Amino acid sequence: LLSFMADYLGFGEAEVFTIFNLFGDAASGMNFDAFTKAYPMMNPFMLIPHIGKIRSGEAMVRKVGSLGGLKGSSQQASLEYLEDCEVYICTVTAQAFVDDCKRSVIMFGPCESSVFVRNCEDCVFWLATQQLRTRDCKNCKFFLYSKTEPVIESSEDLAFAPWCAEYPGCGEHFQQARFDRQRNMWNAVFDFSGKPSHANWRIMPMEEVCTLRVELPNEEVAGLPSKPNGLGTPITYEALCADPLASEESCGQSMGNIPQTRPSLPPAPKASFGSFPTLVFRDQGLLEGRKVGADYVSFLLRL
Figure 1 (cartoon, helix red, strand yellow):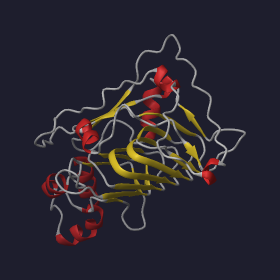
Figure 2 (cartoon, one colour):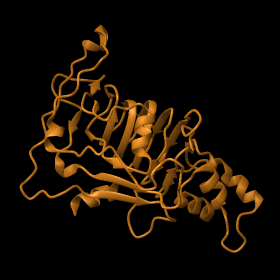
Figure 3 (cartoon, helix red, strand yellow):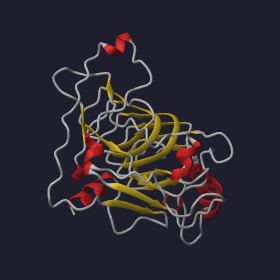
């Protein structure tokens, strides 16, 4: 099962162990009937619960090339009904959907089209995408690279900061997707539900920033580094306060009539501020000895 799912399909080891524990037996392994029941959860393109259930407390990885994009065309990925989970998509995708997730950590490497985030609450995202679109989301954080204006709708208490994640092949994937690391429109947010009285989003202060490092110790891909790499662009207070880049596309007359209230700039960091905490995920068996999901990011920020 480990060879089929991790080596052939590109799943992370933690997810393989979780599925085995759900459907297999330590003494006899996994028979054909059990494999048949587990098979719907082995779809690399759809990270969804077993029928009628919610996936909770799991760590899920998609390795380089598992969703296409290595030598062939990239594919779509969908996440649904995940609670207190961690998902790391360490490959290029064509399009992505994230629906009905709560208190989860979710990372997508470069997505060549749009990432749709809908009906999510209390989640922390690291996303690199052509465009971000959210709807009906509450209290979510986005560490974002967006090639175009991010669009939010019917959402509230969203927080934004620039992309600050690294994983093996991250830099190469940005080049493959033709994402200019110097042109990140993370703070050029357009709100379809904009109000003249207040903003439905804010910019994170330095004290809320958490960097991400994903390690894949048992994964080697020709032409890609085995150690995590990123964009090499550090987050500074000046970067958080910078004006948004001008869009190269017109929003149109109808969209131009929607009021856009920008949030206040974040306060300057305290004199005692040191460095950002880092969430480190190492794909090597089950996650043990720590919480799983967004609550663990909150824990790191409190240290």
